[in-house]
Image (cartoon, rainbow, N blue to C red; front, top):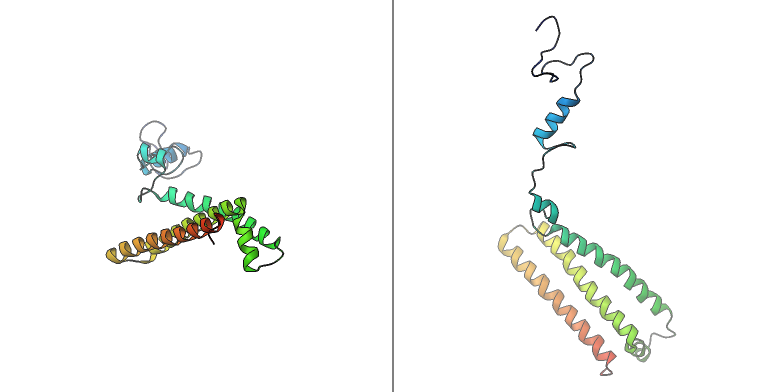
Length: 168
C-alpha cells in the first residue's frame, strides 16, 4: 500500500481513486468489454443476427428498405406521370384514353399503380402495428389492409390493361 493515494490490483490495473499520471485506458477497455459498450465491446447479438441485420421482429430492415426503395421509385414514376400529363393538349376522355393506350405509358402506369399500392400497404401496416394494441383486432386489421391493397392493385392493373388492349 505505501503512501500512495490509490490501490493497485494486478500490475497496470488501477483499482482505487484517480490520481496524477493514472493510465485509465486499460480500465476503459476492460469496462467496455464487460459491459458490451465501446469499441472492443462484446455484442449481445448472435453472429447470424449481425449478418442478417434482423432485429427482434426478424424483418424490420427488409420492411424499412422496401419502403425506401418504393419511395424512390414513386418519386421517379410520379415525376414521369406529372410531366407526361403536362405535355397533353387536352384532358378530354378520348385524349386520356389515347394517352393511356400507348404501350410505354401503359407500362409506366402499371408500374406506378403497383408500386403505389405496395408502398401504401407498407405504410398502413406500420401504422397498424404501432397503434393497434389488441392482438385480435391487429391481426384482422393487417389482413384487411393486405386484402384491400391487393384488391385495389388488381382493379388498377385490369383497368390499365383493358385500356392498353383496346377494350375501353
